[in-house]
Amino acid sequence: MTITPTKPVPGGQEVPELTGHEREPRGPRVWVRRAGWAVADSTVVARRYLAHLVYKPDEVVGTLMIPVLAVLLFGFVFGEAMGAAMGVGGEDYRDFLMPGLFALTMAFGIGNTTIAVVTDVGRGVVDRFRTLPMAPSALLVGRSMADVVSAVVDLVVLVGMGLLIGWQWHNGPVAALAALGLLLLLRLAFTWIGIYLGLLVRSPEAAMKFFSLVFPLAMVAETFVPTEVIPGWLAPVAEWNPLSATVLACRELFGNTTVVGESWVAQNALLMAVVWPLVLLAVFVPLALHRYRKLSS
Image (cartoon, rainbow, N blue to C red):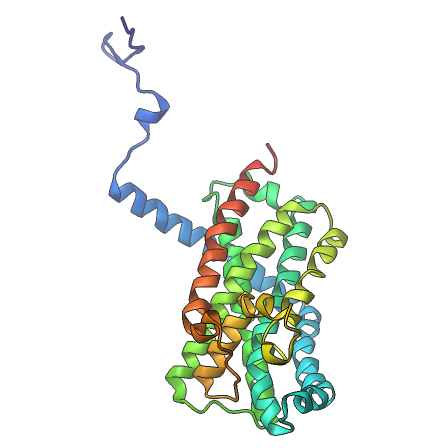
């Protein structure tokens, strides 16, 4: 026999007392309303992070110096030797190089994301947000939104640098925008990897050690040279690198110089440039949310 708890109401009567689960309204309208609140909370958090960048222009300039120096160093110093290994040089190699630098900058964004998250955790910012009446996922989603907006600025600077040294897109603005969209999708996926690592490590110093793992990811890829000039035992790693798919797809969409290998993944670079980021998001978004929930428990 089940005894239903009751509670007194005015008039001397008693009515069944609802449990917490029953008290909470359910239904499509409630979920839509909650999704709207989550989006609004995430937007507020993203604006907070972007406002910090406005008040710290030295950090913005320091971040933008990396892509600028990369264009100059790899386009005019190391690029001559790399282009000679491919049998191309000068403007032809820079035409080949720029999509690789675009993707490389998106990958290096992991470092900024990881250090920003671990710093927020260490300063108690995350704990203060967790005490506010806001969507639990808003802090992490807002962080990812702010980083993608920051990546747009990086791409604008890189495209401007590329145009100054003679790089162009040849297949029209629609294909160029599609290529930029693939780059931002890759950045979004790497942002969530950075968020997870930032919640996982204990200090910015430890985050820097994890960031060193990005270098082999960036170098063993189609970034600077095609996989045909990479040692045979290492070529499959480069071909299946998520960065390679985005670089090859962007070269194709921009109409830049490219060397497409004969492997299945190289022949389907456009498809894999979408699939790889979605797979990374499917893995690291749940991991980051789970870690965030367990952070202070």
